Image (cartoon, rainbow, N blue to C red; front, top):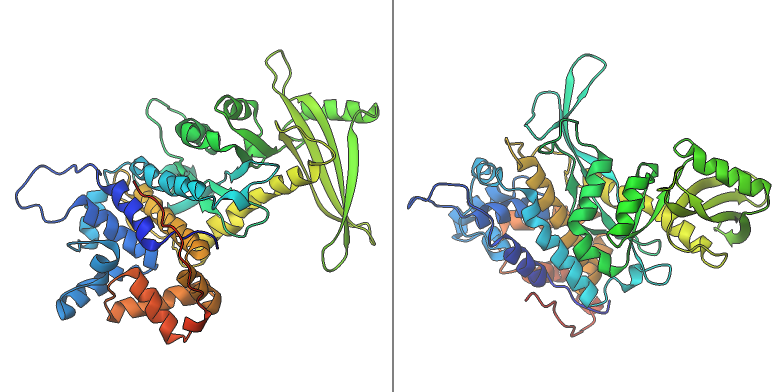
Amino acid sequence: MTQSSSFDDLQAILHQGIADLPDHRKPSPNTRYTMQDAALGAFGIFFTQAPSFLEYQRRLQASQGRHNAQTLFGVQQIPCDNQIRTLLDPIAPSHCDPIVLAVFQRLEQHHLLDSFRVLGDPLLVALDGTTSFSSQAIHCPNCLTRQLSNGHTLYYHPAITPVVVSPRRSQVIALPPEYIMPQDGHAKQDCEQMAGKRWIRHHAQALAPHHVTLLGDDLYSKQPFCALALAQGFNFIVVCQPDSHPKLYERVAFWHANDGITACERRHWNGRCTEVALYRFLHDVLLLEGQEALPVHWFEITVINAKTGAQLYHNSFITHHQVTADNVAAAAQAGRGRWKIANENNNLLKTKGDHVAHNFGHGQQYLAAIMLRLNLIAFLFHTVLEWSDADYTLLRQVLARRQTFFEDIRALMRYMVFDSWQHLMAFMIRGLDLESRLEPQAAPKLDTS
């Protein structure tokens, strides 16, 4: 742990990001709750993973005259749930993009993403779609629809949730999502491919200078997506299946028959058996037919058990990185890293207490999307704290289960008021008798200017 990203640093970024949220209410001298109170109140629910967090804080305010929503998150007046929904419903989720990008920029400035870089320098950003809400009864104009076999209509909210990944790191760093929802001027229902291209256009200026390589499944191996990624300054390593690209694989078969494909292998002991990874790669194979076809580099990995010959893994990819015998193994490892978006992000958000699929409020405009955005920001803050804040890291190591950590902080904040997040962390460390395991260190805080 080389740098410190304290809770206060992250909170400063959050407060700066929501300072100018548009207020769609008519001006009135009777306005009681600010837009910031509504956003911070919702954020507190997600950060503590406690759907009843604000109700507990109202009780503390009544009994003790103060509450954790104010001391920890800066909520001045606690709105009720319906008031939060009403205030946040008209807010387009893109208003929160600067918060996520500011955290990313600070991590880069303090070299906290250096260990994520692979293939010499690139950062890997995995793209994948997930559904945050579905119902056969509750819906809004921004829902997508699907006809079920029983004749009913399913309403749902999908989104692409990009994350920075690395084969060497278990954590992922969330980036701004892109929502798959009806688009103005488009009669056809929105889809993941279109959303992926919008995400590239929206965030290329902020992210492409950081040498980003996009990862994705076969859905992203289409020429329009790959060409756009290159034009906007990104590279890519995406799955490329034979069924989706018959012409490309005709060319691969031709060069294979004429000994034009380079092959190599690597052996690795995985703790149970010796794995043999067989690699093949081919340069400048055309993705389509015609003069406008994009040339890409194709490579394939097949992993077998050295003793039994059983196939353990197989996949093929296309990229614009130059593939060589020296780096094809690293390129394949990077391509396989796209699974981390499901294992370390989407599944974790749905099954480990973040309740990302829960209906916290649907609204008639953007409420479901803005709630998802605040939930993802809370998840991002916890991820950063886990590997950059000594007190937080120690508690997570000792408590082990993620759910145990959140159960403890929910219980403590239900009955006690803490002066700050640091006060809460220190209280838990003393209660677990962990002071001797903390090493004194002075590290610079993140600049939030």
